[in-house]
Amino acid sequence: MFKKITVLGSGTMGNGIAHTFAQNGFEVNLMDISQTALDKAIQTITANLDRQVGKGVIDEATKANTLQNLHTHTDTAQAVAEADLVVEAVTENIDTKLKIFAELDKLAPAQAVLASNTSSISITKIAAVTKRPTQVIGMHFFNPVPVMKLVEIINGYSTSREVSANIKTLAEQLGKVPVVVNDYPGFTSNRILMPMLNEAFYALFEGVAGVEEIDTVMKLGMAHPMGPLQLADFVGLDVCLNILRVLQEGLGNPKYAPCPLLVNMVEAGHKGIKSGMGFYDYSAGAKASIVAERFR
Image (cartoon, rainbow, N blue to C red; front, side):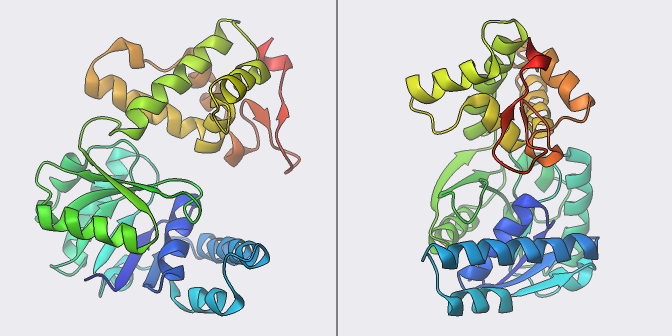
């Protein structure tokens, strides 16, 4: 059914998705416009594989086979020429995704399924720029991809039942737990998660409690493994902002309006772990430390 996979984008999600497919025996083309980014991605995948070997999750042979299954490309046409499935994992920007899918529709084999790892953007809208809307679907992985079990599968308005069933089976072959949802703003995961995170931003913004206090309440009181502010740093504050804007626009409800504190932080370049600074300070490269003075 699916043998050759192309992953577009070699960032955190892209390299994690490529790693997961390659480790499960699929031939993977990892494509990015930057060879430097690709080299960094392979270094990251190698380090993560070493970590898995160290923990006894995989052996050295599996690591070697995984790396052997990975091929890097900077040319989209070459990367997708023989693909059975293309998984797009670039920045969460609708104009960028529409441009990419219009190009993929022209370059990928006619029978190829085109999937997006989008966490909020309409699959129906993405599919509409192609001539194969029945073969366009959402495959929303969660970070870190090799570890997290959930894959949110999003059916667009025109996605065929056969494609949806095949992608569900594929996710199971990866050792994941697929959950099939319909194409509405935020899908299921972020429709529920982002308002909770936004409320935590507002609680901090309004002085209800500090960063550590808010996260501690949710970890110890609600049994969350990670507090909402630390989780937002992990997701990326810019990603949180983009998703909240999609929810606000798509659902037309002011309750989804991003907290002004979040907007200011993103505009200041404080995007969480990826920038080294968010609600916590990651500049030392070690475990996060509280950035208390900014929120007092």
